[in-house]
Image 1 (cartoon, one colour):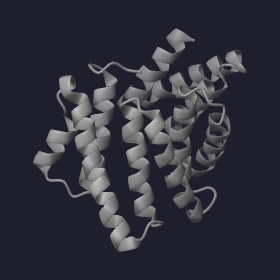
Image 2 (tube, rainbow, N blue to C red):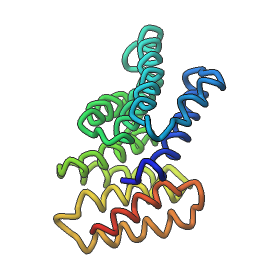
Image 3 (cartoon, helix red, strand yellow):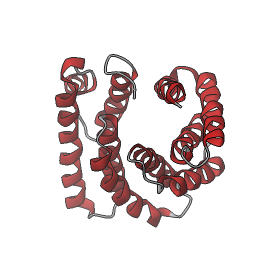
Length: 203
C-alpha cells in the first residue's frame, strides 16, 4: 500500500471531496476538513468521512428503500473507504451488498464493475481466490462499457493480484500492462500507479 505521506492520502482526499459534494451536500468547509486530513490523524479522518456516508445511507434508505441505486452507491463508497484504510474485512460486506443492488440494473452496468474491482482487490488482500472471478467479470464489463482505459487497467491489476499464486508470470504481465496504462493516463491514475509499482516491487 502507499504510505500515509504519499498517494493514499491524496487518493482519499479526491474521493471524499467528490463524494461529499455530489452526494451528501457537505459544505465547502466540511469538505476541506474531511477531504484534507492531517496525515497524523488519518484514521480519525476516515471515520469522520464514514459518518457522512452512514448518515446519507440512513436518509436514502428512509426515502427510497434499501434497494435504490443511490443506496448502492453509498454502500459501495463505504466499502472503498474501508479498503482505503486497509480494512478489507469490513469492506467486503459493503461491496457484496452494493453488488446485490446493482445487479438489478442489468448484468453489465458499470456500477457492477466498479464494485467487483473493489471486492477483487480486497479478496486478494485477504488471500482469497474469489477475487479471480470478480476481476475477470469486471474486465469484461468495462471493456464494453467505458472509454477510460485506466478503469480497465485497474480491473486487470486486481486480476493480477488475485492470480499471483496460481499464475505468477501472467500476473506480472497484467500488472506491468496496467502500469503502462496508468502512466499514459497521467495525474488521474497517479494513485493507482503508486500502488502497482509497490506491488511489482514485491512480486
